[in-house]
Image (cartoon, rainbow, N blue to C red):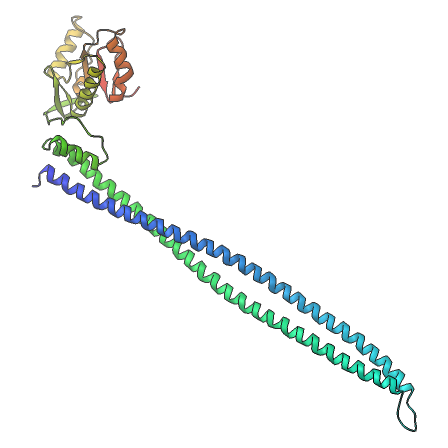
Amino acid sequence: MASPIRRLMKDLRHLRGAHRELTKDRRELKEDRRELKQDRRRLERQRDAFEDARKELKGDRKDLSHLRDARRARLAQVDERRQALEAAYDATIDPLTGQGDPALATQLEALGARRQKLVDSFDARLDGKQQEIAGGVAGLARGRERLEDTRREVRQDKREVRGDRREIARDKERVKDVRRRALDHLRPAEYRMGLRQTNRARRALGLDPVDHVIRPGRRVVGYVNGSPRPIRVVSVGNGEALRADAARAYKKMVKAAHRAGVSLSAVSGFRSMAEQRRLYQLYLSGQGNLAAPPGYSNHQGGVAVDLGGVGGYGTRAFAWLSANAGRFGFRNTVSGEYWHWTYGVSG
């Protein structure tokens, strides 16, 4: 069977691997988001260019329509003038010679040449405009293809981003699972590790370092709201003990108080059922302090400690506890008992 340290080290290796996968997938998500952003900008530019080309094609078609109207109008004027000249020329024809006025004949010839020149000019312009329109239509078709290609790329980018997010969600769950396992193995492992190795493992798990390692202590039967449950208690000095997590917090609090010039000690910590029964009987007989019924005292859960060195409500020690004990998870929970402090309760 693997030792707690080996299990913890294996968990930490898995945790590092899970973090690497998470970091890799986050980089891929960042890159895919960047590509998606670029493709979206490109799509917007292509849309703008497509709209401009469509407007230009619409304008060219209007120009073509106006050009055709102008061609018809100008040729109609020329034809009307020619008809008038032909009528005038016919009126001057000599029945014997069949010849009309030479001047009118010259005008008719010049008008015919002018009409042909107009036709050639308009036809050239119409051909040019039609070629522009054909080019615009082809350009629009190419623009549509580019738009569709870019839309497909954007859709693919979105799918990749969604895939990356799913991968990241799975990676996060894996990190949580591995970290949860490692946290379960940390406490039994750190009893067997030195302080430096313990803090290295704690940093890898995102935990604050500790300035000492609490030893396993002993397993006892504790009580919470009348229900028995096994707990591990650790010595806190003066022959007293607290539940392991409460002991850790208590020792930190005592050190902080000492640095502030306040000396605290444990007078009463964990109590067995027999001790609580004895104290409760003394309370009922009027010979002892207030005591909870057996099975219902926080002392029996290993989270309550009666502190020596407080001295009363108006003392410097009590003022320091009132201001700082909450930082370590302790609160004064029994009215009239300035010495009674409980770990892990709110309010």
